[in-house]
Image (cartoon, rainbow, N blue to C red; front, side):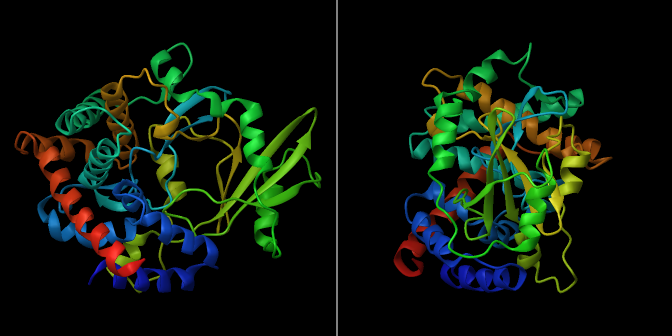
Length: 360
């Protein structure tokens, strides 16, 4: 099955599970044309089709409750229950039971492609080694969340930028378009549940964000509360693309709550699953960190090491898997992650070329 047919069938499946925002889906198709890094981020459904065939041995490695759609721009910051700034994996929409190696290889491929697009300025092999080193050391040491307080000053400097300034942030929120169609009652109820007061007057707008979930309904409620502004987002959540790729006819399970509840993590208390909506607080310090917004002076290898470490934090949610993973890692040849990333990057490139020719 080629990429065009794969996309068509996946989107037909998606429409059976949620109300698709068709203009946003067309925008997603356009963005898939821009470069391979954007294409990778937008096409996890295709990844889960070809990954078990191309890297069959790694796909059979010890299973964990994985992020699934992991890449170098799926990291962000939030405030935990103590109000501390925390950095880690931002999005678990595609969480599913998979080989632990899936997350590592996909993260490494995204680093390869980010280097190709000049978002990172390190060698591909070094990037893979940094990811793997962070992952292995986290497994051996029991993991640890990244709290950006008295520790991890270097990461706080990377995570904070001018786009996190409240003035810039609220300008971006104010630029979001008003809705042209009614908001589903279930979305309104989910947003209201997360507000600090009942019946707080608010304006609900349409937000276009992400790539993999572009086309899903996404609403933001903007309000004034006790001297300042607040924002809450509701995004339609659907089953993981893994269920589509497997052709499983059983009622699919959504693992979002399970993965964030089991991981070594200082969770964001404002991230909640309400029916078919994932709701969260948006604020200058509660959002995804984009590579383009990183400061010029940064230690990219250290950042990728942290991403590898954080990946292990997530995998610790699969109790008993640590020993099996370390045993499997010891059996791998030197440079295995770089080799697998190169192989998968070539497959992504093949699909990208075909998409530009046939699918867009």
